[in-house]
Amino acid sequence: MRKRILLVSLSVTIIGILLFTLLISDIFYRDIVRQANEQLKIYAGFFDPEELAFDEPSALAFSQRLGGARVTFMDAQATILADSFGDLSEQSRGDREEVVSALLDGEGFAVRRSATVGQSMMYYCVRLSQPVNVGGALAENCLLRIGIESSSQTGVFIDALPTMAWFLLLDILCCLIFAWIATNAVLRPVELLTKEVALSGGRPVSSRYAELQPLVKMMNDMTAEIAEKVAHVEEERRMEKLILDSMEHGIVIFRDPNDVILINKTASTLLGCDPNEPIDLFASDHEIADILTAGEAASVYRKIEGRDYNFRFTFRPDSCVLLITDVTESMAAMRSKNDFIANVTHEMNTPLTSIKGFAELIETGAAPPERVQGMARTIIKQSDRLANLIRSIINFSAIDSDELPDYEVNVSELIAELIGSFEPKLRKKNIALQMDIEQGVVVLSRRERLVEILNNLITNGIRYNKDGGRLEISLTGGARPELTVRDTGIGLSEEDKERIFDRFYTVDKSHNGGGGGFGLGLAIVKKLCRRAGWELSVESTLGEGTAFSIRFCPKPEK
Ligand code: ADP
Image (cartoon, rainbow, N blue to C red; front, side, top):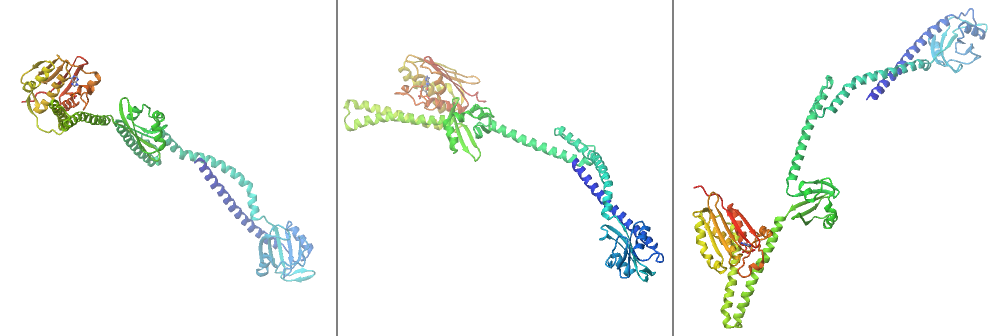
């Protein structure tokens, strides 16, 4: 800007000086011409026809008298009779401007370049009123022309150039000083404002110069607007990050494993990488590396710290999106379903095979008559087992759709009613039953649900007990009634304790032989307790025994 101001002021003044010089030299020149005209007229007045003749010596003498001016004598037809600047006799000057004017009007003046002299001349030509002596005879209307050297307009201008050069130097100096003062005066407030804005850190700025107030206001308004927008964008970013980081799914967007655009907290934890680091897994896992090379949507399953994850890769033109989903539960459900199918198939297959085999033997008459009755008993036993399996499955799925209302059930009485039906089994295994039942313990439920729970726990207490073992059933009342079924049986390992409540989970298939269950009993107990909000727990020591406890919900308010 300083340079610009300097250049503009310099150009303006230089052009100004040039124009001024041209103008002045023109005025000066015109004045010279006017003065020369006057002077030449006076010179012409000095000519005395009685003293001087129109011949060569007189021309020279008159020229000398006029200080060397050119003197030309011409006859009435403008033919030169004598010229102080050389022998030009007999030449005509009738075409010269000043001569033409003199022939027409009596006198004429012209400034022009002389072909004879070879320089700029000013001429004055006058037709003489008196007769002059031409070669001894008197001649009328003769023309007298007097010429002096003149400086041309360009000459005057060139003469003025050295002075002009000094002026220009002075002008440049003045311009420099002016530009410095002007730019300082104009730019200083702007520079001060710029400095203040730079140091303001987004705070409003001010200026003591009135001219800058609109600018300051505009800047402050813009700063406030920008700050608001930045805050808005930051808040949005924060929210986006919060949402992404609180997602249970892992998300990674990357151009390549070394160029991760976005990775949320779950993904960086699962992949064990820093958001700014390349993702190792992509390089070390060949299947994933192949997917990335192929660039087509695909899924793989990976186990990380004991949990199952689905890695879903989808591709965009410039990047790849990886969605990591925890599928442990659905995988477990799938496994459980597969177990279920395998179990049901196996459980159904065994009795069906023996039913079919014995029935065929009876039908073909191949069975010895004395064994037919035993075979029929086996068929009935296996049929009961099949029916039990089907009933258990129906019971298990019926819990979800059971919307029947609860009522108060006296658990103390229910246990007393049920225990009689277990007598044969207890006797068969020689198990001692020990009951510690507090009377009048009431819980809010339905009879059939409590029967299902008691049947399962007591059956297991007998089934997985040792011959000659002990079965203890205790029930306490109070704020939270509690039922415990404890046996001195085979017990459970720590690992099995975790899984016995899973559907169709049985610790040892050999237990199922004959009277063994299908692994649905405890799953039903757990499901019923969860729906009712009761706490179910198990304590067990392998080889020593197991105790199942249920803490019912607080007694209903009367
Ligand atoms: P099942 O009908 O096979 O008994 P449950 O769901 O009732 O099915 O039990 C699941 C598994 O838990 C059983 O197969 C058994 O191995 C184990 N189990 C259940 N109760 C006991 C217990 N009281 N003592 C030892 N193991 C038990």
